[in-house]
Length: 330
Image (cartoon, rainbow, N blue to C red):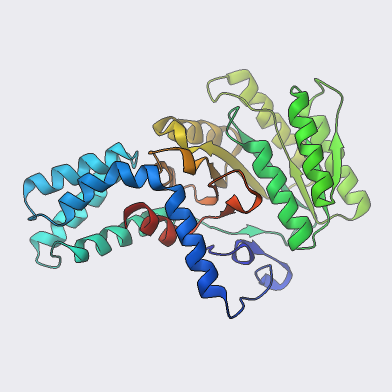
């Protein structure tokens, strides 16, 4: 699974991107795990009293009820929670599992397994690779896209065209243009209120003309309940496919973790409109509902590919199911 940026991308020849791990890699990973655990502090604190009391108590009916309540409170979701608790209870009944640390470890393993769904990589072998990013207003879509452009341009040495498809918010265009300048990548925008599909068309045309490696396309934020705007998003996708039949090669949806179960509904609606291939789960540092990553992966089969755990550049990073589960529970 994607533990490092270099593990997230597939490059020519099938190799992962980025530089090889150095001798200080174990220490770096421990540092990142500490950062992730701190970012998930609110979720973990919400679970701590219930889970710790549960996992070190006798494995009684009350134990399973309390564990179920704790996981639901963290927005792991009713269906996913029932699946996890049922599995643990069955293993305990069959004497495969005792309480204490053994139960904690098994819980982490089950949550890791649930989060590990679909393909967790982004294939950069198509030339150009077209990545479309969508999401509800305020989910951190533009910021996440800018950080991704920075990594591709500065760290992976890919030539990138960044397209400001959110033509209705001048602030979004300005913000994305600043990211483009910071990352040293090309930038395409339209006139205020212009058709987002036209901006996407122009960006792909420029990328093909300039032989660029990657096209990153921002879109206007929209509620998943706004049918006309969802139809417009589907139109953007069709316009892209007319230029490159297999594109967009990746369609990422940004979901604000603080919205809890509403994020699950958003993911379902957007996926029906534009065939979402992966999630960017943002604002994990500001919520007690971090379990929504597990609910989306389990119930929709959409892999979380990137997570946002803060405002800094390095706070956008590839999602690792094992690290996430350990940070959530341990």
